[in-house]
Image (cartoon, rainbow, N blue to C red):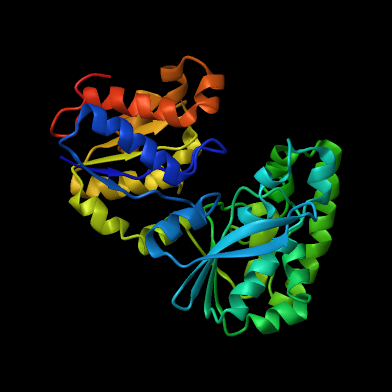
Length: 356
């Protein structure tokens, strides 16, 4: 049986590349005769660059300003005349050095992402794809713009660049469904801080509108990565699904067509996973070819009916396998390998689960 192993990242526990290797190791123990094709995925958030570098090569390294002004080492990919940048490499939550707080929610910025864009332009990139997700900042992309010399300068410098905003987040910049209200609390913001961040973004939105000639704040994806989406849209960017970008550049369609079984996963498999995320895209593609889909996730909150509607054969939880959340996170690779072996032992040669 030909098995496509195509997970997303598992939060901060495992990158998509690490997760694919862990699943493959466990699967091979129980079903050594199967052919395993590893195709780690991303929706534009953490792991975006790792996944692309695995397939395309061209990995570059730069020292840029992190979310709290300390320098960090960031990676990006240059393939032919296209640069692939992951905002989490420069302003990700994982770069805070500890849990997010009210102070970090206020202070974190996106200057380093602008430095990566600057490096891409200096390297001759004619197309710049920026993956959004996992950011610590809610600055609306002001830091990115400052790194490129301000709004007028940034707009001029990117005028002849095909700028792609790779994100599956559809939230606007402002309001109850905007960057501050929805994602601010995840970045350490308390209610008063959310209000302050919203006020900052409202002022910034007017400045973005002046350079874009339209109200980018209301556009889908403007609220992605703390409002980085809004700045990139104002600078001439166009939004594409991050999962679709990865799929197009890693040959996912051909992999799906050849697969007898698809295995995917992420940190938490819940209702959000079914709306434009990696798992939903894979399930849709597999359904076209009649291939079953198995999900191995850190946690699973969906019931059997929701799985069936999504085109998922079965979903299995690392937490349930490990016996605790702490072990599932602290020993993620080994626990995922063990879960994959256990699941493989219950799969028939048609890819269908013999028991659940």
